[in-house]
Each structure stands twice: as structure tokens, then as C-alpha cells.
Image (cartoon, rainbow, N blue to C red; front, top):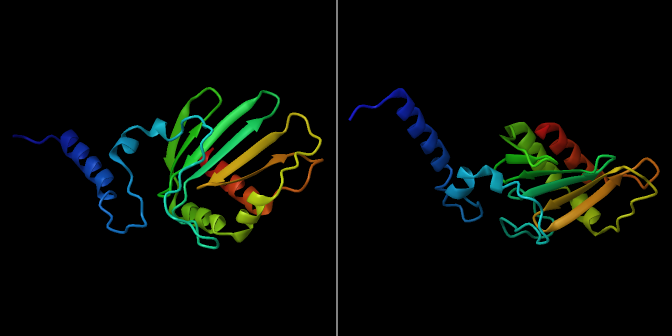
Length: 177
């Protein structure tokens, strides 16, 4: 049987995807072959059920294996965008029309995201009551990390943005735009 360069490249790509699936560390969730084959499933519209934790979390523990979901809604045009980031840095961004773009965070951005997710202020902000202020046509951000949700309305007349949440929103907006 003869091997073509295209066949060799396909095998190499398949091996690269599968190489991440052999972790023996029980705290690391291995990506399923189905999820890798259907990246649009990652960015499906939000349902009423919370995100499923990928690892057990304890208060104060770093969220290094967290699945992150950011939803931006509002504005004059009634925008609804979602960004989903998997623990390994793969991301999917779905715009208002349903178009999805995929990518992967670079090592520096992934490290920064993990630092921001480990910030204890994020847990505190998740328990704070939301006060949208008196604002029309503003963007609202809802950030879900594992099972915790926080957010804010980006309004000049409202309360200050929660700093840890706003830092994660700024990072995800920058790296997935």
C-alpha cells in the first residue's frame, strides 16, 4: 500500500488529537473524540442547566480545569454572543446569527485565564446581588465558571464592574475577537 503526503498529514493530525486523550491523571478531563469532531456542539446556545464541573472544586482551590462560559447580551441591536472556553484552552465563539468561530488560547493567555479564575474575588462576586443600574441599551455580561455564575451590566451610571469578573471578560473578549 502506498502512502500519499495527504494521507500522512491526516494520520499525523489524528495522532495529534488523540495524544491528548491518554492522560492517566484522574483530575484531568480528557476531551472526547466526539467533541473534537464536532466543535460547534461546544458553543450551543445556553440552556437552563448550569455548566457541568470538569473537576471537583473546593473553596479557594485554583480553577485550573474549569470550563468557562461567557454570554454577552443587550445593546441597541439585541446582541447575544457566547464564548465557551474548555479547560485545555480550546474556545468557540458564537455570534448573534449563529456563526461559530473556533480557536485555542495561547500558553500565555491560558495561564492568565487560569490565574484570573483562581482569584478569590471571583467567588465573592458570584454571591453579590446584581444591580443593573439605570441604563438603556447597555451590554450585560454573564460569566459561568464551572457552576458559579457572576456578571454585570456595562453601564456608566450603574455600580462599578466587579473587578475579577471584568478582568476575565476583558481577556476573553480580546483573545476571541
